[in-house]
Image (cartoon, rainbow, N blue to C red):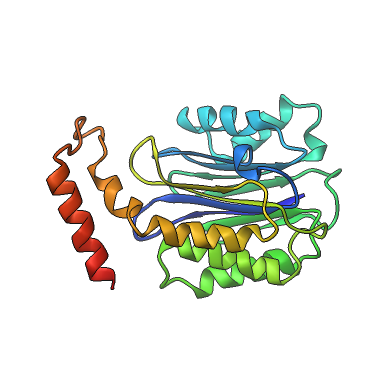
Length: 236
């Protein structure tokens, strides 16, 4: 009932997942990312523990393929599931259960993986992949959205549209960007709008948040405000 892309930004090493579907609040259950560990998308008849337990397995050093096999072995309903996994080195593996609804499948690239089910056809994934590859000059968030927009233009979820999400993690345990459109007539268009809004202040502000290396972050409001205003002025 969904298609998604997992990718690792070659410039920064950051992980990102973009996803869209004709179902409510897809961002609440499909994407799972842990900085320095990997990324997992669990979909079709979604099993949230694929994301939760899968990241635990990656932390223990299991490969994406080993992780998939271990998750499948623990779930008698795995034939109705779909998942894709990327580890910290960018290695990927994917699984589409035999009971997933057509069209369903997955494709793997050098630094990305795309999977979907209940789609208009194979071209949804092919065009998503082609757009991701072609837009390598775009900033990571916009590149992921552009890829999903191409998949939607190829037919997307054959039932229609309802929700979409974009999750990106950098070096910290908290997300660089976490955007959700839970119920909307044109969710990818709204996701694109929210990403533009994030560039107004959030992307300039997040550098001041506490990090593991700087537990207090920056709390001087004058410094924060001046930096943000300078960044906004430079964008004009």
